[in-house]
Image (cartoon, rainbow, N blue to C red; front, side, top):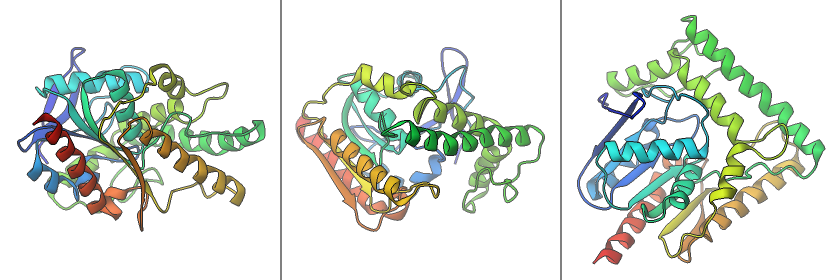
Amino acid sequence: MQRTFVTLADGRRIHAACIGRGSPTVLFEQGGEASILNWQQVQPAITALTRTCFYDRAGFGYSDPPPGQITAVTVTDDTRAILAALHVEGPIVIVGHSIGGFYGTIYAQRFPGAVAGLVLVDPGFGGQVQPRDQAQKDTWLRNIRPAEAHLLECADLARQGRQHIGEEHGCIRYRPAKSPAEAAYLSYIVEHPYWYEAEYNQSRNYFIADQGLSEDTQESQRVARPLGDMPLVVLTSEFTPMGAWMDEALRRQFLGDWRAGHDRIAALSTRGVSRIVPGSTHFIQLSRPQAVVDAITRVVEDVRRERR
């Protein structure tokens, strides 16, 4: 993994690169608690098929931290600027995992004509957390807020030089690196405060607000629009992750909301497909990578047929 950067208009450096050849370009958008490395089992097959681009969002990986709030609008504004800096032309295919799938959907809705297809891997969506009453909302807040606060504690530990691979104080844990370059990348993430602060920032705007709707949910409502006949595949995990604190009733409710949300995303396009991947966990690209490769290949080939 080489350190390659683009510089945005405000001077921030974003870790980004494109490899391979062909059209349409496929942009990978990772989820939260993730890194570029999560696409390793998918990348070779897709890079052999067409041009592929990867980047770390502001505050993640090697990228500089954001100047303000991380929301759907600020992320997709950055994405547009990054693609321009990478000289990516023409409508692209976005492959987004988890909250990266949410950002990919928002990008397609905000910039009509800029996206030719979507592959959404167990994607997040506006209104992902849907408490039915104040008691449920209080339960969510009691469990989410301490986890968010812990991220800031982790950032403080990093600033004190007390975060190291294998000694993460319950803050973050990655599988062993496969190369010195990967080890350097993961060590940078663990030992610097930016990842923890970006996760905190992202979470506070995405999941649930103390009052009213979260900022990301509001932004998603403002830009909501159908996606015509865009090739669109939504992959849903069989074993959806849920908080250990959830009781059985809340688990059933969350699972129903999650799968219904994915069906709604697929319905944004007349050609949208929503399916559950057997045996998969939330990181479908790691647990069932061939399903993700097949979905991307299908969308890329559909886009190419339309251009002939």
